[in-house]
Image (cartoon, rainbow, N blue to C red; front, side, top):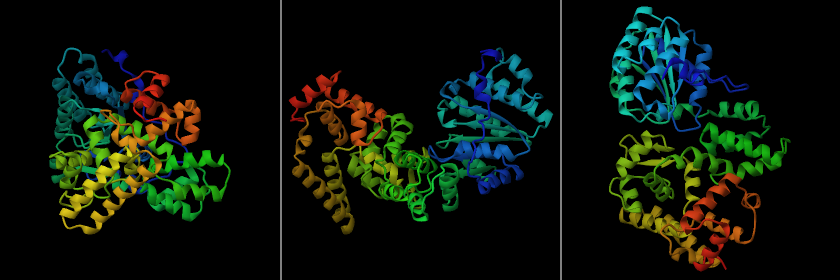
Length: 458
């Protein structure tokens, strides 16, 4: 790969957006880390918490030169990754990296990195390197290069990493030496004042103080959750200030909103391997999670390791104590996960939870899950949907997939199904693809015929 073959847009600092809520308190924390001479700033949180936006805001006020690299999966090649890092630094400061770029085809990555560090030390440039979307790096050889850079960088140099999950870098050592500034999900959440400013100034929504407080509570300060709610409100009201309609929407806003579901499916669930998706689905009925409880629901014996992985991966799982015993999901995330369960699955999972709590002397929670299991089972019987419990399929259709299949049988188009179920057309297509896969068919006609064979349709 020559210099000319590098994709220049990976090195562009994102444009600052108009009407954004300023986050002075967090920008000040980044600046403080630099003032104290720390080696690393780590901005780590789930998708949609404003990591990139915060780093961009800090760049707008810092006096330092900043090199930017938007990481992608192709950067798991050590030579390619290092060439992009050198190109980013050379673009930010023309005294750095030029010789390394010219010799990069003949030198090893380790030799190049040592030469680059020496170059940075000689120039003494006050320079910061931003590695955004670093969670896309999975190759340990690349992590080793970054760890070597952090261990040997000159005092005038600083690294900023934006990521969805903790990278396998020597973070514990850096913490012990007070060499890392960490900005995580808890502080990235919008405060009530920031959320109110975002909804009025950025989203241009005239909401009552009660509606704003309700949205803040339901989204738990999740920035993208607030934005998705705002987009849904705009569509509902057509941009007009209809306070009564807005208040009704906010009162009903939950994890089954089509924007929330589409975002979480595309940005979170679809990116995870099947064992993780299965664990998330099976444990989504719980308000609080512990490893023994999750083992009981999932049949696994490694739930503690899975919970710790989900926490470190920032998959909307929050730790509730200092002993890593109890966790909980973000409420909207849990609600979206529950939509993927069939009614029969919910009955079975609630019954397992009830038995576990009863065995551990938590009578109130045991009764709670037993009641939910009974209510769901009664609903199945009352609506005649008990046939779903006996679907002769390896993976049964979910309740939403059954609804889509019935509407297909009624002759509705994708657009009509989307309107009727109040979901996006992209979500309809995803459900139809799932239906085809589970039924082993390739067309609507085949799906309807197979559904009738299995008594899923009248």
